[in-house]
Length: 323
Image 1 (cartoon, rainbow, N blue to C red):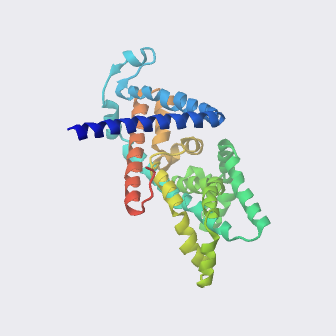
Image 2 (image 1 turned 135 degrees about the horizontal axis):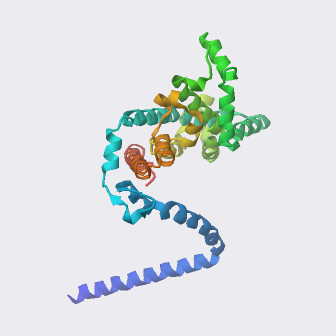
Image 3 (image 1 turned 180 degrees about the horizontal axis):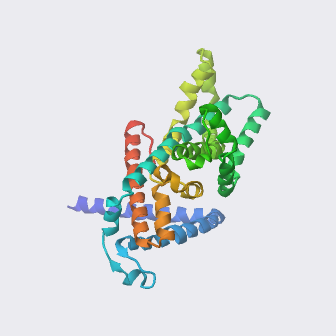
């Protein structure tokens, strides 16, 4: 008993000493790097005010919200808005369009920056490489409104893309944005054009950290450029690819609704109307605040579920995960 009591006292004393040492280290670190912590204050304030603060408003998804009555006095309706959406006439179309549009982006938009980074890594001419990087980065800094205006011009009756499609198919078309079958390709490949250079930066950064000795050893073994790319570059940047892929899958139920709203029209709703654009119409244009909040909340929950499942699979298969 005496030995056990002594052990417990020593254990408690060690915990107190560890806690005291930790507090001392934190104080020293804060005194040394106080300016860095000060720089983080605006970021934390932004997240608290604009991201976490408004989250209490999610409750209107479970109420029949009336602005004049406010959050507390509006009638509680439970899951009726969720049921209404699931049983509604647009549920299948919205989910299908959202998934297909994002799968197009995942298939083409996710892989394009990787390919660009791999190709740029093989370029040895410095001026040419910098020129390509500058040209591919530039569209990212163009305003989305301007980009959509350019798309409208290029896909107009006599636009360059319309003339190209007419030349390939041998058929005459009006504005390509008036045909639902063209919306997904236009949306996807215009997004690639806009973001491929910017998205490739993180892959180029990962490639730059690869040990050059690995390439030298591969050359001694007789590997060519493709062999080094396949057996060294890709395996070395695989953790980066996996992490970004997890985030991409976690956003399958999201879409850039601003771009969609500026490009779609009633004639292309059957392929262009997604959950985000539907929430915009119901929430802001029709003032169905509770219903649109419920639909948006459901989409966010599904995204989190996809993120969690993908992260679990990645952790088991590749030992790379977000948490």
